[in-house]
Amino acid sequence: MKRAATGALVGLAVGDAMGFPTEFNGMEQIAAKFGPWRGMALPVSSGTAYVTDDTQMTLALGEGLAEALGDGDGGLTAERLEAAVRPRFVEWCFSPENNRAPGTTCLRACEALSAGGAWQAASVVGSKGCGANMRVAPIGLVPGLDERQGSGAAQLQAALTHGHPTALAASDLTAYTVRLLAQGTGPAELLPALRDYAHRGRGHYRADWLGDLAEYAQDPDRDSFATRGWDECLAVLDRLEDALRSPDPEADPCLATGAGWIAEEALVTGLYCFLLLPDDPPAVVRRAAYSSGDSDSIAALAGAFAGAWHGADAWPEEWVRDIEYRDRLLALGAAWDA
Image 1 (cartoon, rainbow, N blue to C red):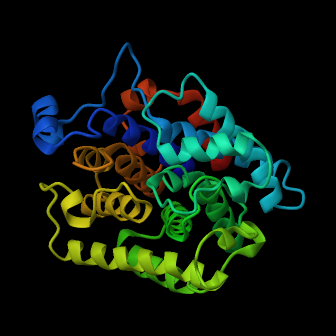
Image 2 (cartoon, rainbow, N blue to C red):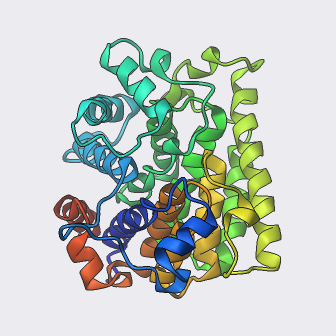
């Protein structure tokens, strides 16, 4: 049993920690700090490899998801997920541990969520930042969700903060990527499956999960709102396929597929790093973290992909030992792997 959930959650945190000290740095600065990328060590201070808001919000979502599912009676619904995740996002927002350069959209939306009222009014509909999907991996790992539930849950968790249609589509596609890899879809089969999924999503607004969110945007109708997001995701999948025709693991991955500050680029640049080095999970997170863009989020997603594909044994024991929030990550992983 490969324990895909444990592998993905630990991989996400490892990538996050690896990219924490390289974010906002250019390639020359990173090289001066860490030397060649293939020898990059997991940064450890006082025995702990510290993570960022990416892992913190992943845990908030994952633990909220576990509560929303409960004993499984009635299945997962939008109401159950929002009721469990919303207070955890608010708690994260005001926590003293929220001191890791969190994204402004997440802060703004979570502060609005804390005031009560409809969550759609709190969502930042103009933002498609990667904060929407750097935390979505648990949706792709929890057992028992069908495709429609997984899609709706991935979009809703994104929309609680980032209401742009591309943030929703990229989060949905990211969770689906994690699910496919955890279930055994190989790297060679992955991109055609993702492209097919994105085409099926075009023109389908998930009102059962999103309510009237689209009315806060400027699209002519709900289906146009949804299509706008999926079309931007299909465009970056094209960019990823082009990059993989002449892959260069020695070059900054952000030059190939984007810097990752926005949701669809974080997805494809993390995926590019995984597909460059699919048989070497430590190299995947090193390559992703050793990049000029949103390094922690790119590496978090790349680590989740590699961990979902390879399982818990993907990561060196000392990395697992030192990662911050280890016990919470392992508890979620063990529950879902069981």
